[in-house]
Image 1 (tube, rainbow, N blue to C red):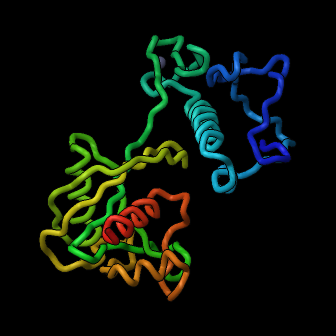
Image 2 (image 1 turned 90 degrees about the vertical axis):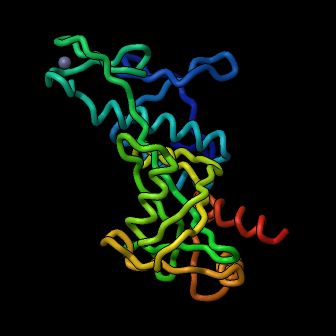
Image 3 (image 1 turned 60 degrees about the vertical axis):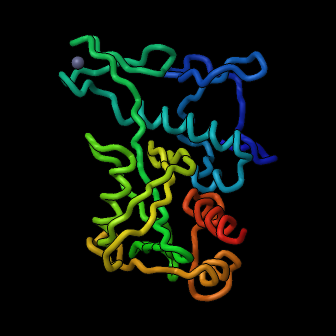
Length: 241
Ligand SMILES: [Zn+2]
């Protein structure tokens, strides 16, 4: 819920609020997240994230991810009994088998592939016309982040990379991901979409990307909020020097 001046609403905790989640202390006052009553006018988190100041956006992501986790994990994954929140809403405990369940974050690698003065980007069929962005994918069990980058690029674009370097991260609470941004150096292979996830992958020259960032031409890049865009902007800035 947003206030009129576009911040997150702080309200007294309603009496009898069930399953309030403690977020922390703010100016000496305890801050909780609770599910809004059914008739409350709500702002979509993606929409809100585009306008909220960074700290408020982070708080909104934190609160909504924790509430979503409670909503979608009412039962014990081990024995099926109904679980109850504990530790101020940061875990759920099973009264039947004693297991403690923790909220999880899913790591996603997102990467630019560079080859000198050009970048490899891809597009998903569901994106707006002309939109291209960094390749991305979930990290699998048993692999390092660098291995995940190499595997995803090979699976999605048929290209081998080396010299994988970490750049920056961004929480992505849809519903509970952490985007980890990398740049990798092209090594070999012909870029082609390899699975149904992408309908095109191709190389972009620096002038093409500069035009896209400036809103000129047919190619569209993600909005400034997205880590993919920040990676592209950073690459353009680095190349310019
Ligand atoms: Zn259990």
